[in-house]
Image (cartoon, rainbow, N blue to C red; front, side):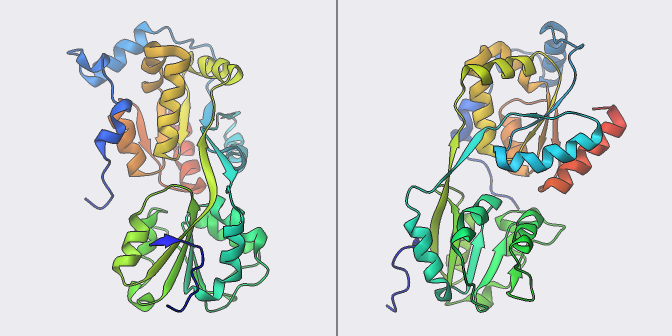
Length: 314
C-alpha cells in the first residue's frame, strides 16, 4: 500500500474501538459515583437546571457544506435546525497529487471514493474517465453526486453498498467480488487520515492499492461565538446528529473547554443520533445515556427524526 504518486511504472462484524484511544472520552469523576448510569442521568436532569422554556432544536454537526442539505430537510419537520460543525474540510496540501492520479486513471481497475468530500475534491480535475476503470462510492449520497456529474452505469461500472448495508468499508466490500480484481490496481481517494480496513482488505485480496489524500479534515476551533452558542445549547434539551467518531471527540472537547464537567454532564443526557455502530459505541464509552442509531445517509437520519418527532414530539 502506498501513496498515489509515480504509480504507473511497469515494474465482531464491525471493527471494534480501540478503547485506549477513547480514554479521554470516558467519564471519570461521574463514574466514581455508585449511582447507575440511568439514575445518574435522572439526577442530572433534575439538578442541572435545564431551561425547559428554550425551544428544542436539532443540532447538525457535519462539516458546513454537507450540513446544508440535511438542515433543509429537517425544516420540513417544523423545526429550525442549528448548525454546529465539528470538522472543517480543507483542500489537500499538494493538489499536484490529484492531477497526477487523474492523468493516470487508466492504470486503475477501481477508484474508490470514501466520502462526498473525496468526490468533490477529485472530480473538478477530471476531463475524461476510462470505461475500464470502475468507480466505488460509499452510499446513495455519493451515487447522486456522480449522477449530477453525468456518471451512471451506462458510462462506467459503479459499485455501491447494498441498501440494506451500512455505507462503510464493510458494506462496500460485500458489494463486489474481490476475486475479479485480483492482480489489479485500486486507488482510494480519501482524507489525509482514515481507517485502513478497506485498503488492507483489498491488499489481502491480491490487489495493489494506492492512497490519495485529496482533502484534509481538521477540528473546528472553539472561538467565542461558538462557545456562546454551545453554552446556549447546553442550557436546553436538544437532539444532536453526529456522523463520525472524530467529530464526537471534538464535541466533547469543545464542551469541556466551554463549560467544564458541568457542561459535559448536561451534554451526555441530551439525545444523540449516531449514524454508525462505531459512533454509537464510542458515545457509550463517553457516557452518553440517550443514544439512537439511525443508519448511514440522510434518508436514514430523516426517517429516524420523523419517527422521534411523531412519537415524542422531539
